[in-house]
Each structure stands twice: as structure tokens, then as C-alpha cells.
Length: 256
Image (cartoon, rainbow, N blue to C red; front, top):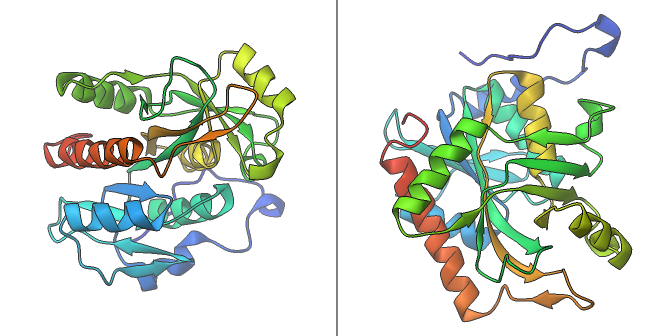
């Protein structure tokens, strides 16, 4: 049975389209689901988790259910806040409790070098989706207990991961020098494109958990953009991060 955990709202504010409408097509989803934002990461984690390559369509992404009832599901790619939020809505309506977004980001701080791991504790909204859930709120939190659990696991496996606030934008080519300098001065650690919207959806639906893992693939803290996503060293770090996340979940992370 699929369900919607949203709080009661006035009839005039009730959405015309419910994520529950998609339930007959999807069925019950896994309690824990990894969300990816590019096809390469999606394919890598699907193979690593031993999931069927066919999957089920959710909007323009695909959901890959686990083979076991208590296993880990996978969904992706869901690049950008609007698509990620829509997919999260459907997953939450169909039984998912914990969503673990994994992807790349641009570093705002010199100490977060290429290949660094980041477990963001919060996101500052620079996108438009979250405003449809909370019109006046701009900062949204990840699940603090889940993030602490993931950070401990990474530390136990020899990985230093940074924690801090990130900026979520949906305007890739409007990351201006002035705006990035302002965010850097405020202490934000990185830039990405989905997290604040995902956290807004989780808060709105109630009782849902967002535990993100980001890998620095670009540097945006200097005068020039320094892309690194195609460098072999960065690709290896992305592969390492996906392996660690799979290990974390397979070893019972987030009460698996």
C-alpha cells in the first residue's frame, strides 16, 4: 500500500496532482534508496548493488528495486532540483524512508580539494523548487543522525569527509564570481544542484531522511573555473565513494 505522509493543508492549497497517482506503476519501493545524478554513476551503482538493468520508469529517471525485501534500491539519473524533487515525492509516497543522494559538486573552499568527500549538513536554496514547499525558508537540513552515521563509517574506513553547508542552484551558467565570493565568505563549502529541494520535500512529507554524499569534481573558489571530473584521479575518487556508500548500506547503514 502506498501512502502520502503530507500534513493536512487547506483545500485551496492542496495539490491537484498527487505522487500517489504513480503508485500502480511503481509499486512498493525500498526503504533505503540511493539517488544518482548522472548515467555513469547510475550504471556503476546498479552493477555494484546487483540490480536488474531494466528498472521502472519514474518521470524521466529509472528506479531499480532490490532483489531482497530489505535491500537497497537505486534511482537515477535525476539531475537538477525539479526532477530530483519530483522523483523523491513518488518514492516517499511509495514507502521509501531514507534517500541517499550521491554526486559531484564544485568546491567553494581551498581546503576541499579535487576528490574530497563532503557530507553536507544543510543546503542554502538558490533554486526555485523548494519555494513551492516552504515559501519563506531558504536553509534546509539533511538528516543529522544519518549524516553522523555516514561520517563515522567513512572515518572508520580511512576517509576524511568534510561536513558543512552547500549552495543549491538550478542556474548552472549563472554562478557568478560575485555570488560565489559571497557564499565562500559565508563559509559555504560547495555548490551543487539538488540538495535543498530534496530536503524541502523530505521535511514537507514528514518522517523522511536525506543523507547526501558529494565528491568534489570542480573548483570554483578562484578567479577561474577548474573542472576535474574527467581527470583519472577524480574518477577513481568517485568510484571509491560509490563503493563506500554501497558498503555502508550493505552493512546495515540507516538501519538496513
